[in-house]
Length: 346
Image 1 (tube, rainbow, N blue to C red):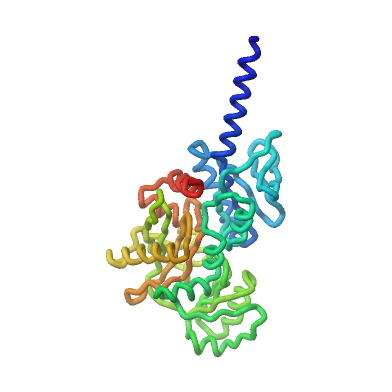
Image 2: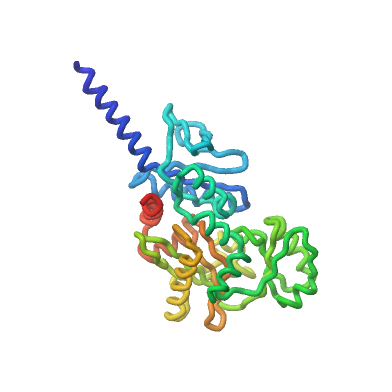
């Protein structure tokens, strides 16, 4: 008789553990297949550390070309069952209530991973397949938003097998101009071209990151970026940050080396322009049917914000812009990430 209460107690603990698994377990996925995988791993670890010990139970999962693995602190990494996105851990099947996507670039920002989770019926925090696919294609996104009177630079789009006439490009867009991968982030593969003879190398560099490239006119002005999130079922702007860069432009090196860049929040622009950028980004969020958090980048010239691009899985490292904007808006990272989980599970 003395042993029965212990068995009942142990059974109840197991049941409570399974209930917790069903309702609170969040897979934080990071890594990816692009050159942004290092930054993604940093973002994933930040999300994991701020969710740990609070309302949700996070599990860090790395998705790379070599495999999908649960990063387990107590034992060797455990392979994910891709059939239902589960993991066998300590003899129990670990399932997830939702997925926090922290993969910048493919397959987390272009819609591929979202399509997989849609098919197996697991919720995720970021934008849908539709929204992710559009925003990841810079030219397509900007062209669509131009139909809603949202300004962006003139640009030309090329595929890797196209014949490219450098003289015609310069005649149409002028110098300087920007050459960039049509899909991608963290400014990888981007060049600012100031001389005609540099265009060929810039095009080759961009094609190393993507099979399509975008060449855009140079717009001189104040660079700003704005974060928008769905916070407690309200679409809000959490800040507009001014980017002041010592490099030619806000490239990969400048983004991840604080000594090369000043990120000033609130941006040193007029109150009216600050409000306009915030409202414009919320409008973009709604037009593109985004979910979770986004960041939109602009150049302000002659009181007009020109959209550069929309990021649906923005960086979440301690030095990234969205965390800094959240801090400016008095939102802790734990509150920010728990809100993401709450919104996707409601």
